[in-house]
Length: 282
Ligand code: NAD
Image (cartoon, rainbow, N blue to C red; front, side, top):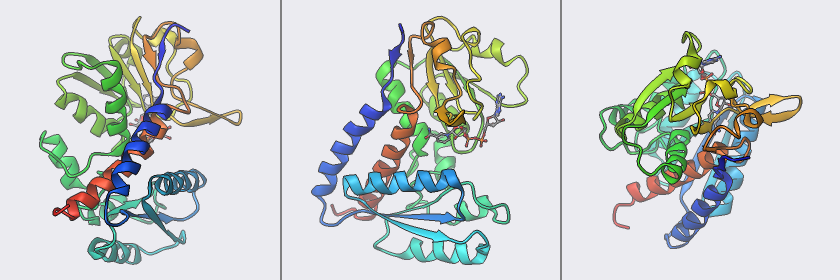
């Protein structure tokens, strides 16, 4: 393998150490409320990982696990309660929600000051305007941290993102644009996608299609960031065919151990920032 491995697990562990030190100096523990509706298998694993990591750094993560058939009004009421609870610093709703619930309406109800997932329109709008939001979505934020290490000067870089979701592709495109990159966002309806990806100095795959990106999709020496988490023959793999590209790229993230651990670390960092935001005298 000639490409540099971008080790998200190691980077996340450094962030955990810094957070643990910071939290131990606070007068009380920051608190994160996690709302989970239903029993989606992947969501249960993600929530458990978030709780474990929170525990490790000294954040109290309280899970509100509601049944699949929870009514919208009930969920909105819970969010209202948590928004006004002075002991709760961050509130997140694990996505996806069951089909009968309006995701936008629910996310929009979280106070922008407690929206540690950074999905509330106040925070996304501030990011879009290149102003300072209270919080930026954890996955894009984690990717930016990894990118700054391997590519400290982002200005002028050609970046192609595969995937235009609200939680990854769109906020990431905005962050990169705010860092003076030239950004192309592609999606399921993009035609001749390989012609675009081959232009990329930095290629970010976030589409949820196992091993979609092959060697002939990338430019020699490209930096590759793989956001995808897919299961193939009982094993986890990304959206990039790691074995196929590893001798052509200059640097790339593995799956698992790349973007995933950074997402959790950034959520916890946002929670500590929420605590400090709500306790301005500290
Ligand atoms: P999503 O389903 O909301 O969006 C997928 C996007 O990819 C859409 O814009 C769609 O048009 C595009 N797309 C789908 N198939 C495509 C194709 N063949 N070619 C080009 N574009 C295509 O997904 P999401 O929530 O953004 O998640 C994407 C992937 O990233 C999933 O595998 C998810 O599990 C993973 N994910 C990982 C993390 C992490 O922390 N590592 C965080 C969030 C999501």
